[in-house]
Amino acid sequence: IHLGATVMITLFSFGALYWLLWTLLVYEGGIFLKLKGLYLLFFTPATLRDLGYEGYPYAMGIFEGWIGNLCALIFTFLAITGLWNLYQRKAKKSR
Image 1 (cartoon, rainbow, N blue to C red):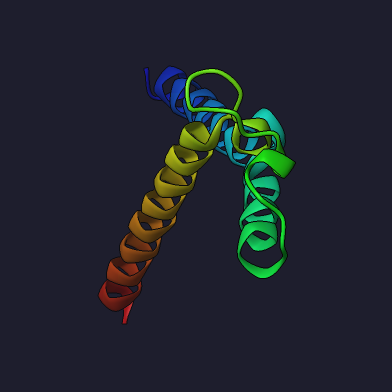
Image 2 (spheres, helix red, strand yellow):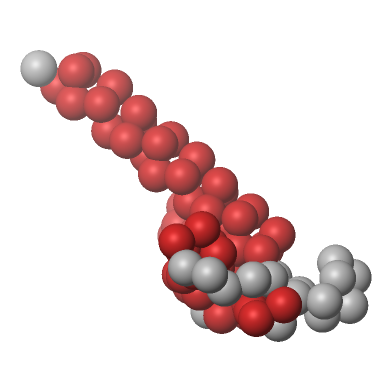
């Protein structure tokens, strides 16, 4: 039973990590494409129309998929923070 649980937890962890990284870095261009678009909007004379944006539900251009990318970024941050806190508690216990 312990071996089976270990295999299942490992497969779940790999699946969750794959989903987070794929959604963060690949889905609809990834988070870096959205950051580049924001940079272009704020620091160059480019407009939303130049980046392909025509309206929220129809054509968002470079910002297509931003909700998925943002959710993946938040979940990644929460996972890293949780693992860091777990590591710190175990490190204090071992001292």
